[in-house]
Image (cartoon, rainbow, N blue to C red; front, top):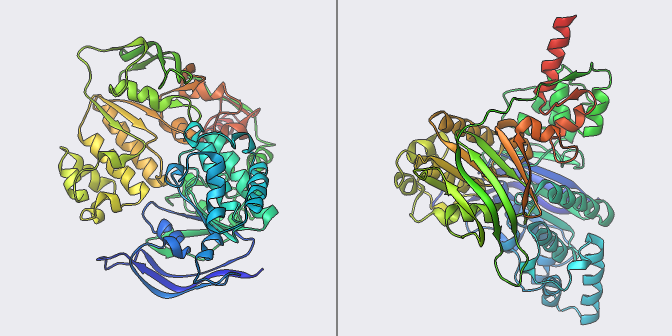
Length: 530
């Protein structure tokens, strides 16, 4: 395999910063390789990825060597087509009004003849399965489809290296899995080298060639996936332990850490083959007073568009943490806007508990909440937020502008601000987006403490694992309606597909099993009985 990019003792410093965002990194990327880049929020992953593409390298000071060994002259604009970059938010990358225009935009900038542009657009759309979208306006396609469009627009330019910065952060589990499967095809069938930064590691570990862990700007030596997972599993206190595949955690909890530690659901089932069968008890439904109830809510954004919500009936019980799940475009965020008062139902009504609870909202894009010049000033604007900011690890960032933070750091700041308000009701739209495993656990602890003080939480999430572990109740929205709602274990146990990987592994072995800990619990029970 030929070398594409080589970093040698590479460091990067942002303006006015004395500490390096990327520190003494040595890395070689060869043609056809597939790298997974992981690390805590704010550790330097995005900076490293952007440093690998000259056109979007951040403003700052570089030290060390950065060498590009691409077929085209690295000093020309045509280099942009050799290294493709997919950002976290698909909206930030789309520049035209229709799918066909977006696919041809980059090719037109390369000066290709129209006949070649048409041919490349056609074959790329067919390869990624988006040919049925070709005539659609981009504002009428889903978030998952927009991210596929971004990938397609880059692939049409036939790059040698593809860089992706948390590309599935805003995608539902089904769309995310589909995107990653296509990414594997791109790597295996087209020979394009891939480096992807991602917190959803469970789906990527079985398919990548090497795993790079980044800590405080330092890149550890790349390791094969199983060796990387085994190293993490040997330390139960490691912040990424919970991010490892369910099959690996089940094996580790039951004393199996050999070289063939399981990574996939299939390997996890094989591991449990001789495990005694068992059953987890389902919770008894305990209802409290409703903090609000939606009754036959209908809503659409324009008269010429279909209804987004179609007769939603939904109640939220006081003191609970309730997760609202569903695919991209299912209507979750629209329902939140109705609850916030930004939108109003066109049919039906929302009845609130009297007096109406004080409510705080965390939207998918926390930037909209920021209006101060520094993180410190933002936190001081809300009572109690400064202390929460310290707990969430924001103190080293106090003098930074909120817009200069990473996506995960902005998310933590937004969470601290809404919790600092100390409302009666928290509405959180995708609160785990951009958060590493340690910060997800910290968020869960803060929300648990908030509820102990009388608070109620409603959140939307694509993070099935977070909902399964920490929420009291879950609902599924589909086709503009709430189609199921139940206590969390009951909710996921009723699903065969839309559930946790641990549940899929335990299928047929531990009835109603949901979490990796269920295996260990049942094993202890069996040993006691013996």
